Amino acid sequence: MFVSVCTCRYYPCCPEPYPDITFYFHIRRKTLFYTVNLVIPCLAISFLTVLVFYLPTGSGEKMTLSISILLSLTVFFLLLVDLIPPTSKTIPLIGKYLLFTMILVTLSILVTVVVINVHFRSNSIFIMKPWVKRAFIEVLPKFLCMRRPKFLRESITHFSKNKVSLAPVTELQVLLGGQDDLYKRAQEHNKSETVKVKYHPVIQRAIEGIDYISDHLKEEDDAINAKEDWQYVALVLDRLFLVIFTTASLVGTMSIIMQAPTLWDQKQPIV
Image 1 (tube, rainbow, N blue to C red):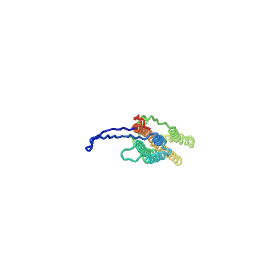
Image 2: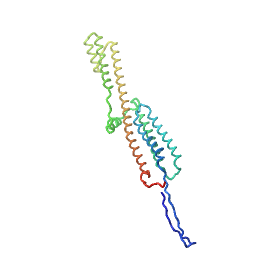
Image 3: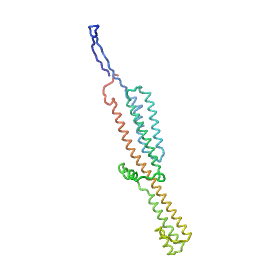
């Protein structure tokens, strides 16, 4: 498209007018080449960023995927530098979109490091604060449409504990040949640890061994529950950042694409 402006100028040396015609050319590159070779691949790679938070943390591939996306965007950015004309006056829209996507991927890498750190925590090093448990286990899952499943392991562990506590009594009853007095005293020992009853040294060592096994199973069960709590917190963080980054990617993509003059300028090209 071009516009011409005609003006007449008078000079002191000559009385006749001198016509002056100025042509203004508005040149714009056609967008098909850039759309097929740059815009569509960048859109596809940017939406791969969202899949980082959908990938399970235990797979060990979250960081690999994030860094691969960042490297691919860097390659596209280097390709873009060779295709667009060098200028410092303005930044082309495709350059803005690539910068936005690279910032988004960089933030996703930082967030992924935090999520992986939370996933592999345990109470032996980090003790979960009450506000963390309330916010990420009780409150946020309701808003993110998440529900924590009830594991069968809890009922199995509870059954095994009861079995351990009842086994010594049954064995004592058999070994003692039905001596009711000692059997009742053993039952009292199982019910309350404050009762001090003297047994045969062999029986006493057996009871102490069973108590040790029971305490060890309880500590192991508490450690597993704490580890599962941290893993669930990491899962909630993944879902939260999945929603945040999906919204940011959609809003940023639409806001940059809507600035393209091709969408609003309906003027036909000369050729």
